[in-house]
Length: 142
Image 1 (cartoon, rainbow, N blue to C red):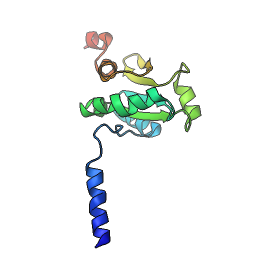
Image 2: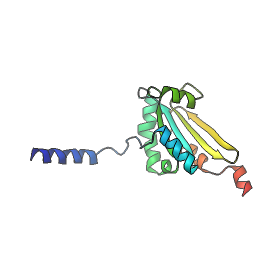
Image 3: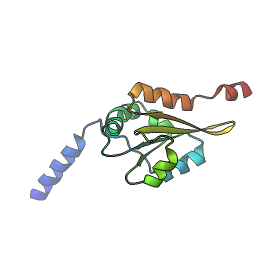
Image 4: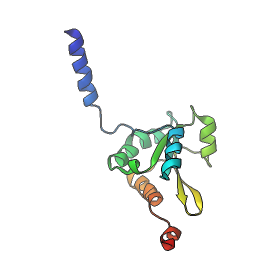
């Protein structure tokens, strides 16, 4: 009986988990593979657990973007500078974190775009939206 009560309490606690938790993401390798297969933009958040601005992005702004469905249109990964240092260094062009980096396939090849520092959901949505929109060269080629 105690086991059943405990299981019910655990299920209730999981169901009541806050909606503002960090969005689900893939490993960089998984996201990169999906981008190569689908041509979707690859969006990577590079940060660290000790960074308050990184936590704000992961736990505040990005969940709001995810709720609106925009992260479902890209391959999204999180790279932790402390756990994946060599990869983070390859991705980053500046040393400040957080960095939101997007790789987007264009008619001229892959293009890299980035934002540095904590951003609002509206800024992130605009950034990702630019990566989803066809470029002027792609529109004129049609």
